[in-house]
Length: 162
Image 1 (tube, rainbow, N blue to C red):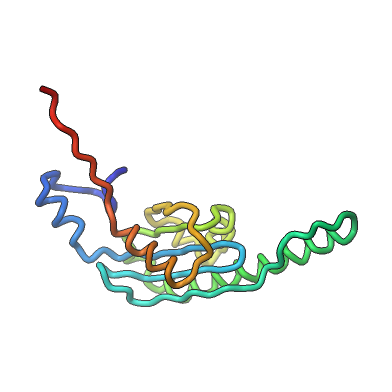
Image 2: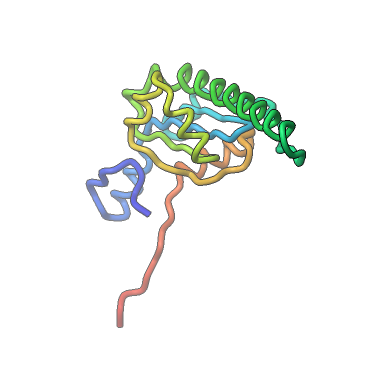
C-alpha cells in the first residue's frame, strides 16, 4: 500500500513518522443505501461530523406489478438517502475542499459514486481519493473505525537475503 498523503520526501523511518504526524486535512464520506457518515479531520482531531440514516425498504419477494412498485419505492427512498448524504457532505466539506489533502470514501461504491456525482460536490471528487472499502452501515462506531483506518499504515518488515 502506498504511503498516504503523498509525496513522502524522506524515506527513512524518522521521515515516515514525521510525515504521518503532520496535521493533514481529511474528508471522510461513507455511504450505503440506508445511511451515511461525513467527517472533517485535521490531524487526529475530528473537527466536524454527521452521521445519519434514512429508511430504505427491503426487497420484496412478490412478483409482477407489486415487485416493480416496491422496486420504484426503494429506488426513490435510496435517492432521498443519497440526497441527504450529499447535502451534509456539501455543508461540511465543500467550504474547506481546497484545504483537503485527502478524501476517504467507503461503503457501497455505487452509492458513493451517486453522491459524488452531484454537481456541487465535483470539487470534492477532484481531491486525492482513498477507498476504505465496503464498510458496514455507517453509524458512529463505523465512522470512528474509518477515522482510525484512514490515519493508519500497514508496515511489512522483510529480512534481507542472506
